[in-house]
Every structure is written in C-alpha cells, then in structure tokens.
Length: 127
Length: 145
Image (cartoon, rainbow over all chains, first blue to last red; front, side, top):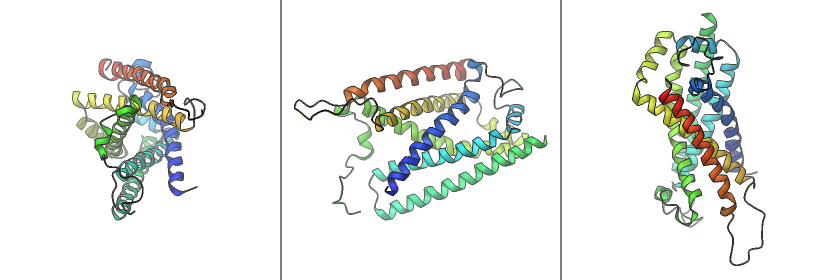
C-alpha cells in the first residue's frame, strides 16, 4: 500500500473515532438541556461550570478518551488541511515545509492537550 | 513534481464555488471543506483555551469568561452545526467510497447513466439528519440556556 493510501485509511479511521467520541462530547456539552442529560453534570447548571468539570475530571475514562479524541482529531483535521493545501499545487519544497509545519504543530498541540488532560485529572482527584 | 505531470488544479479555490454539472454533491463537497476548515481552526484554539482547567478554578473561570456572551454563544452553535453536517456528510462519503448506495456496475452504453442519480438519496438523507441535529442544537444552545 502506498504511503498516501495508508494515511488516507488512517484519516477515515480517525473520522470514525471522532464520530463516536466527539458525538458523545457534543451530547454531554451541548445537548444536555434538551436531553435533560444530568448524569455527567452532577452540580447542575452549565456543563462548563467548574464543579461539573471537576466531577467529570475525577474519572479516568475522561482523560483517556480526551487523549484518544485529541490524537484522532488532530490527525484528521491537519491531514485534511494538508490535502486541501496540496491540491492548490505548491512545489515540492513548499509541500515538505507545509508537512513539517503541520507535524510540528500537531505534535505540539498533542503534547499540550495530553499534559492538560493528565494535569486536570490529578488536580480534580486532589480536590 | 514537474508541472507537466498530472492534471493541474487550474481553478484552485475558485473551483469550490461552482457545482457545475456535478450538482448538489459538489456543493456538499464545498460545504464539507468549509466546515472542516472551520472546525480545525476552532479545535486548535479549543485545545489552548480548555487547557486552563489544568491550572486552577480561577484560570478556568477567567478563560470561560473571555469566551462568554451572545457572540460566542452563537459561535458555539455554528461549531455544533458544522460538526453535525461534517460528521453526517462524512459518513455518506465513506459509504460511497466503500461502494454503498452507488448502484450496480453497468455496461457503458450510450446514453450513459451516472451513479450520481443513485447517490442522491444518500445526500438528501444526510442533509435531513444534519438538519434535525442542527435544529436540536439551536433549541439547546440558543433557546434553552
């Protein structure tokens, strides 16, 4: 299998992971009022209220799925952006530079997001 | 890659604007790209903003305070609607790529028939589902809070 075919297969696979995890995230964070979905917002009010953030953050499943979603969404989004940019016909030097930039940005944001998921888990467990 | 290899993308981004003879699916392609770009930009900022929860309650409240109000509420809805469309249309694209809903292969006898006619029901179904989700999101995000 050629390299781009492999990357495309990963792009589609990451899309399926995002569909499930981001679907759950959107349901918990943005459809909570209409679905009266209070199990993961035990303090009531808005899902982004600090007490609800802490309550969710105490369970290990949240940082684990956050990190999985983070990796899948960064790969899916940045590979999609790379495809759009490559279709505009940059020369090979610019293609290499764009790829390197996207890899560095993706890895940097993955490290930041992973650190914040683990650090907020530790913080929530200490409260 | 030398310019003589492959077909040049002469229209560039301008090619996104017109569906031409490709019709509705071509506009869904454009909308899929626009929503995808919007979601990428939002997501990169979202990672940075929500990282504040790792510091303290004060840092979290400060970050959430900076993105509150009617403007950001409407932006939140746009992100939700963009995700709803991008996700449902993405499922449609995967189904078509795997050969579902495009009809059986037929002999290429004139007048040629296009598989787009077979795909149309998938496209309409995807739009209906995305529309229902967008309405639910509007009710929750814009009217019930």
